[in-house]
Image 1 (cartoon, rainbow, N blue to C red):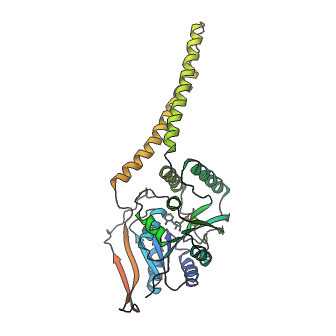
Image 2: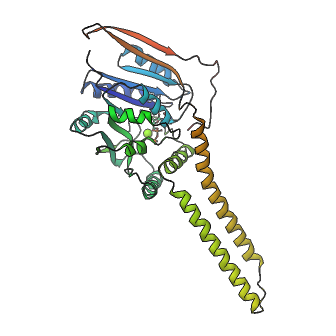
Length: 342
Ligand code: UDP
Ligand code: MG
């Protein structure tokens, strides 16, 4: 039995409208590279028929591994779970909504095999995104790169092909708040950009609410930089200096015999300082909260079920039989839906 050459991980959250199309196109792209591949479809606690479609796909196609998360964990953790189950020599991360064209895989494999550790998709064009999203995203990456000591390439998503070595390292990184594209940049090695035009979603709508997006952005900033803490200190110093300036002004006026007509200025300065203090405390709080969560060491994710076909090989390594394996983790009768999941 030859080694598994290729694994694909695709997170799916309420993606019933795209899954069949995705698995068809992805399978054809994989088959163009090797027949030793697996496609790991991770259902991130969907409330639509995503899981039953995955069950059907994995029952009819031995290449497809179905993983059901116990509840919605958010894309980054769904991907983490999927990665931990992959066995291939090369691993592709791709969204299930067909924004990243599966057909690029063979070309990416070529680049990887020429001696790269990571081949990351770099969007030169983005169809179907609002100007506001494009603007905030570009602003965010500029800020992130200013603050972070790890260069994180702009205009990239999680669409990338990695060597087994990189995936093994990634699987060992224990952090709860994960910004996977940044973590992969941090690993380093030889990382090559692969320019591509990103399509519009095949069907359905974005699964990222503004809140989820903001929380991913804060995760990224806090896990790749502690500079906001330093900035908070400078901000505190600056506002104290401002307070002293006001004090000096008030005293000189008093010495000159002018009473300081005070109401408006005191209200303004009080609220200015109160605001600065709360902001600075908020920044500290963000880091402290994350520290508490890391220290708890809870499991990163919970899996409900895995469906895969195991191959059984004889002594000479020839594949003898395919056997359906369903690993079940007893689920409570009513799944708790947790809104706070990232
Ligand atoms: N996704 C997920 N869990 C979530 C949110 C999203 O697994 O809680 C998946 C989603 O199914 C898709 C990918 O993450 O395959 C990217 O999400 P989406 O396309 O909605 O984000 P966008 O491309 O709009 O930023
Ligand atoms: Mg998308």
